[in-house]
Length: 338
Length: 291
Image (cartoon, rainbow over all chains, first blue to last red; front, side, top):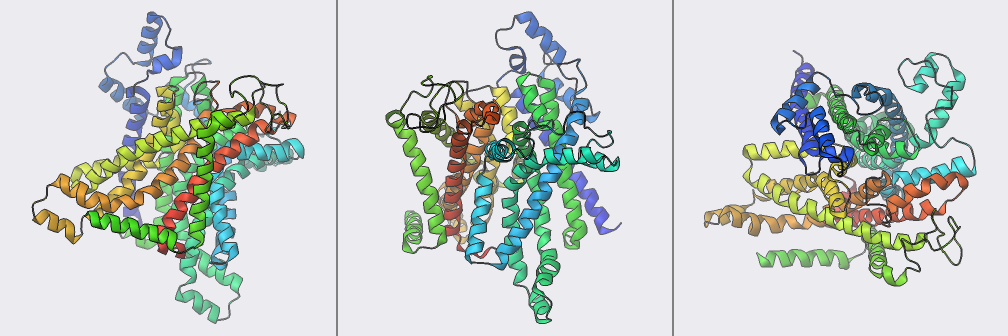
């Protein structure tokens, strides 16, 4: 077997205990911690027979260890249970309705943050130690300190309320949804050549993805900067400059390619931050994604959906980590041989 | 032993007061911001012009000479609410950061020192918590625990335990290889003594940095929780909660009920971030090189 294949297999095997631990953490948080899901659902003043019936319905009347085994058994079958409201739809369907919205928001925010991060990071590295470098370091600290709902509201105020350029909420204008193919409105509009839908979808995406993108961009500025500073000191850069290659090419072709490997690993880690940020961004912009699903169902006391969404997020995080690691090993053969 | 700690402290103070580089201004600005907010919290009853939970004027009055930051949707003074809000925010930051420190540091110490299976399991657990999006874990815990200052602080504390654990464990792994630890063991010091008298003092200097950066993050999570409606119950002056309350009135061009509380969240976070970054660079000068 090639070393890459060996690496992929070992990495997947290593992810399995992680999945179990995360699922167990969710179980402990939702069922073992003091605080009672039944009380969270019906309130503390519900009559005893209602409480008993609900406990039975949720399987909470059984011993914890049985509950745990049931929980894991169901999850292994991809069964997240049924929602407790609105016709008791399977939780996995509820999540799949919302997941494309979150994915679309994440992809655009990510693109924006990487774009800003690379441009500013490279610029700061070129101006190492000069005022521009200090200013961009400050930019890194300030963006990380932004409170997403506040920053989002300021953008809503400026571009939505005062200038009236962009919509401040929702995913697309009414009756503009493109034909459902992937659930990503931008992609679906392109696939169906639906220009009005595409414009509407992009206009709705603008403010939320800029909010989330700028929040995360500061981290990329910092990583790209320090990684570039290291690469720019190397001999092959000096050699490239000595050969008379234009500075732009040296920076973007020779240096950035090598500086990008540490940036890639950080991207995997930032995905968790992106998801957490998505919950706040979605709530601020009434974006119908998983974050709003989670918050909505907490308010409706839909215990099963809340648990299911968190399990889904846990599995998502591990999957993305896995993909990034494999990509990393593919790009940098040294990793596989460690 | 005492000598080494005092020497360390004096070298730190010398570094702080000895010369002035950018990092001293960064840390100083952060400290100044925090000092102002702490003062506001302490003096709130004396400087707040109105009762923060009483209707004192017409709803949604724009800022004017009577209400310098305007009034919110039910006519409460935004400025007074912000001042009192800093008390809630600082209390929760302090509580949660202390919880994480008190759990994370001993766990990191013991795990790094003992090693073996116990260490491996704990690392796996901590890495799992660390990988999980903090806010979402805090949402789950806060949802189950229910509202209350201590409950909110606990939900936030859980997500930062791994940060302390990882940092302390890493330091213990390198410190315990030192010759003086071996010497202590050779003269018959017990594990407990080695841990607390020889290793702990040497890992302590890294704690302020983590504490500061943790506090910066904690305030964002706290404001996030209350913005999502999982914070403290209604009339309590809380920045995140006020932001949520003011949000529906944005289309009516009421910018003041959200701008000021949100600005406070950003300001406090910025203060702690700057302080943490500054101290970090003062203690580890090689960081400035961008390595």
